[in-house]
Length: 164
Image 1 (cartoon, rainbow, N blue to C red):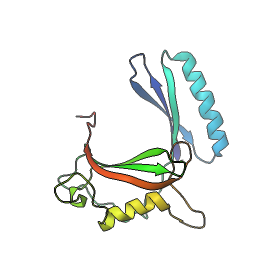
Image 2: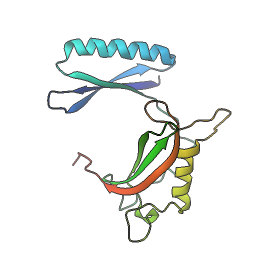
Image 3: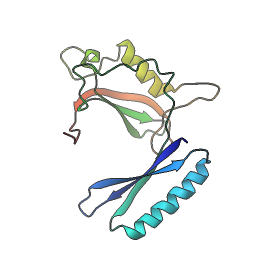
């Protein structure tokens, strides 16, 4: 049986967050998942000394049609990230990131992604324009469901992964 992952993020008095994960069955409506997630988080809050920061539902996706699955390159590093600063239709900022960024897509002698690079340009086009996989347009958006309309910048960044 396939399952989805429901994750509740709990914050402590020091501002640190910790996830709590629970598996839920597939096949329900979004409204049913919302109702369950709200009830579960409320029940958890009664037992927890922390605060509920958020709840998310992760859907597993069949990747059998994925064409770019290869193994990591020898230099792949999760702390090396491509960071995209985006603008929404409402003028707000949003962010997207790609861990294990390949520096071959960076403009010479800089930390700026080469937006003329075919692969970078394709990724930016997907962010700005979305895709139409069957009939309906799927458009990336921010947390408030405001469509992404523009990539403002694309930079290479190094981030602490928090793991050893």
